[in-house]
Image 1 (cartoon, rainbow, N blue to C red):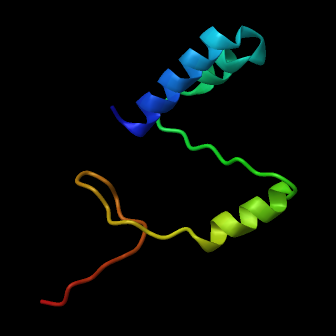
Image 2: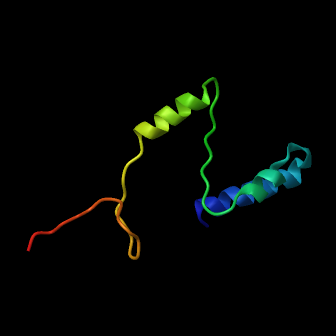
Length: 74
C-alpha cells in the first residue's frame, strides 16, 4: 500500500469511528497525490518561506519538456 492509499484508508477509518469530525470531506478532496502540512503557532507566509528554501529541481522524465536549455557541443 502506498502512502496516499494509507492516508485515504486512515481517513476512512477515522470517519467510521468519528463521523462528526468531517474526515469524509477531507478524503473526498484528496485527488491524486497530496501532501499534508500540519502546523501550529506559525503563519502561512512562514510555511511558504520554509518550503521555498527546500525545493529543488528534479530530472525530467521521458516525454517531458525541460525547463532549461541544454546544449551538448558536437
